[in-house]
Amino acid sequence: MERMTRLSALLLAGVLSVGTLAGCSRQAPSDAGASVASESPAAAETPAPAETPAASESGTVSSGAEGDAAAAGGNVLVVYFSASGHTEAVAQTIAEATGGDLFEITPAEPYTDDDLDWTNENSRVSQEYADESLRDVELAAATPDNWDSYDTVFIGYPIWWGIAAWPTSSFVAANDFTGKTVIPFCTSSSSSLGDSGTLLAEAAGTGTWLEGQRFRSSASADDVNEWVNSLGL
Image (cartoon, rainbow, N blue to C red; front, side):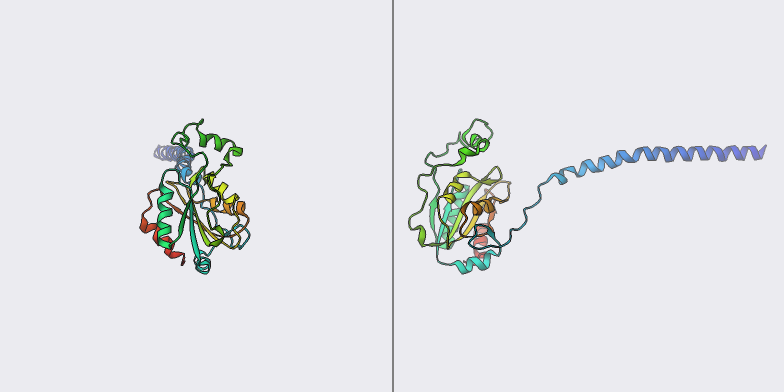
């Protein structure tokens, strides 16, 4: 009788053990799914753009800004398009730091606040974004006075939908950058410089284009001056 009781106890323990393992095996996929879901936002982030190899007089972006800029020297021009004043503030600081001249890119038909309302699909910028043929913005003046006398040209712009605001492209397309060192900079509350400088360099087809810099919309003069000083101009 005692032997039967012991055997029954062993069988019961085995059944409980198998039930526990089965319960664990059903729970595992659920836990794994929760872990994957928690990582998905990070996986969706856009990776940082890779550095672009150096090239000269080919319209492509060049790395090693400090050495190239130091060699450039000469007269400095700071060109900028500013929709809401942020890029203008950075441009003025660069001009003061370098002793350079300023040139504002001004559309022949200036953008109004309503034009710049990107949340309205019928606004001017939204329509231009949707139809690339509308991005060829006519400028009030395309070429600065004494353009040929400048050796180093900074070009500043806000980021629109991941690229340089299109009036900037109109300026680049209208001018010959042969013999000039070109340094792009942009302002944005969240977007990076991305490929904006590279795309402008490709559109220009001439000039030695250095890797640019992105500033937050509320960039301080100290931030800008630190970057300018790092260029070794």
